Length: 134
Image (cartoon, rainbow, N blue to C red):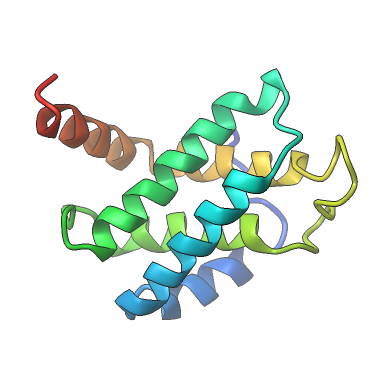
């Protein structure tokens, strides 16, 4: 998994640090990211796993916003929000409109985030499984 911090990720982490203190801003981030994820094509078989991880990250943020899942460190919350903010940016390192390449940097950032907070993501998955009776 990616362990080197992506280019300009610290910028997104700083923005996310301010954002996570405001649940309304998290709600807006979750809504916008969910909408973009729904309408974004170009997720080849290679990137489908990353898309699923991104959907889980967005879901986790939504559960936090709704107060359903609060067993998460602020550091993890900020890291996840930073990755989602990066995904939302239309002009990142490789612009999304460059078909075939535009999602590559988004995928790299999501892979970095998932690797950085893997333990807390697994805890969230366990929470979901317990909640769903699995």
